[in-house]
Picture 1 (spheres, rainbow, N blue to C red):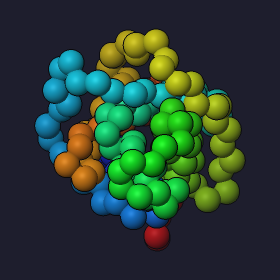
Picture 2: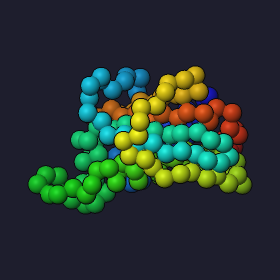
Picture 3: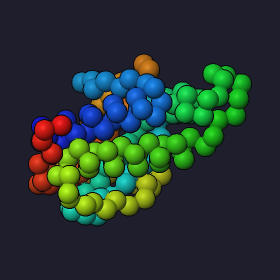
Picture 4: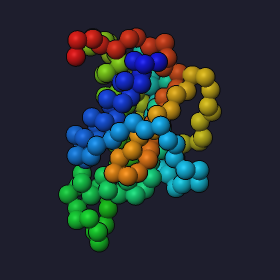
Length: 154
């Protein structure tokens, strides 16, 4: 489980740092119940089936969008936040599997699904909480706990 946690944390922090010049930190606290969130899910098909999900507040997506697209902080139309959320999840999922799998191991992922049905929480689901720019968001991964160990020497 520690290998998966490290891979998730590196994938999330690297993606936000490289894409939006924003630092994301793992935190113990959860998102407040009832908080407005945008969600997306993406299926892993190979080498093992599983799922990764992201839940992020619209205000954080707006800040990321302004940075990514070089828009002024206020008063400018923002590109569709759902598209940005899908792209963030796609990038995080790819980086996660690159971190987790051996270098020569191919993988196949699906397309992000926006506003997916609620996930069933099971023993094979883990959730990580992050803070970026004073906003909390979550990443969850299901059914990948027997996957190959991460690459070493990096």
